[in-house]
Image 1: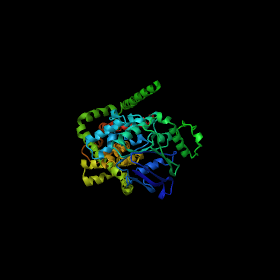
Image 2 (image 1 turned 60 degrees about the vertical axis):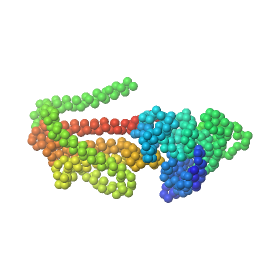
Image 3 (image 1 turned 135 degrees about the vertical axis):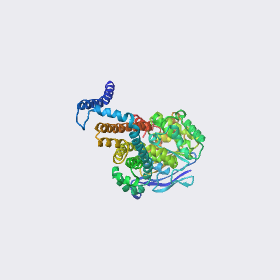
Length: 270
Length: 262
């Protein structure tokens, strides 16, 4: 569905300045949830902004269902890390969610129905007439997710969507992403620096190197579905995959098979 | 906590008592005054009551305020859309900048002679001059407000593919509104200056006309009363603008407060 071919992005004059993305190639299948993970400051946000058409790549291409992406496409939604800056504080929650629908040629009643459905799927149906700043951080990010869902995009990009909320809220929001994916059946690309999160959420994890970033590995996550914060994270397979990604990012060699079982599973988040 | 409550109560007391004390001091110091130029405050207040409660309200205050309202409204109606437009393209601004900077540097009163020649001495000339004087602070703060829109919000607007109308009316203008209000505040004060000056130069009514004609007919208490009235009008207008701002920018203060507390 989404193809990223030899993507490179440098800042500065004629692209000879700082290279943020070296050479990134991967593709995302219809309905797949791909998590892009990499060390802090590896150009993940730049990558996501380039994929979404907000930034022009220095070279390489992004194609969505065969069409090159040069501007954010109509069937794509993006959830940014900083919900406080991407929601409009002068609009109510309902108006924030309805805003992108107003340009879709829908009737007022259809707009309202889509808004209510989206708010219901993030459990905020009773908060439509509140303002974003009256809500907690996690709730604000759910509003941002509802706004992205309301126009039923085919593909949802998320840029470190849970980096600004506390750990408990983060776990809830991770599960919310899995739920809405079931409900709406959309393709999701999520960028994070959190290795646990990448393994927990992803059908596939794309591991990036430091900047200028390249793809180190594309790892299929064959954990059983539905995922569960306790059950899934208890699985030995989860610990193995997590350790594997961790080593790849830290650039450490794989240990011999016997050591593998001793890999600590509770290291702090990156 | 108690100290803070006491302090805030003290603040309120000072806010009320200091102006009252100054008025009282003026009253006492001027009580026996025989100076032609500084009549006793009691005489000024008598004159104030005679003129402004309310015989000259309809004949002078209302025309002045209508001119100010019309000029201010025209300035907003031109400056905000123009500010949004000039913010859309660097080249456009490069082309407009010398003209804007020149006109902004031109003091409004310098245009009164030209205004009289072109439009005449009626209200139209005054309204045009008031609008001119009010225009530039609003224009520049609008542009400043648009320029300082958060990059994440700009990205959001592009991703959501809003119509041009929604982009401007539901995102750009509201986001720039806190800065626009700073311009409105400056403009309102400039507008009152333009009202008074234009009425002093060429008019048959208005508060500026009243003060000058009182001075010319050697009615010094009336002149003082008129000056006092202009000051009170300015104070009331500024208070009114604050009320409107509080209402329209409630989200601004609330979202800043919530960002600080989280």
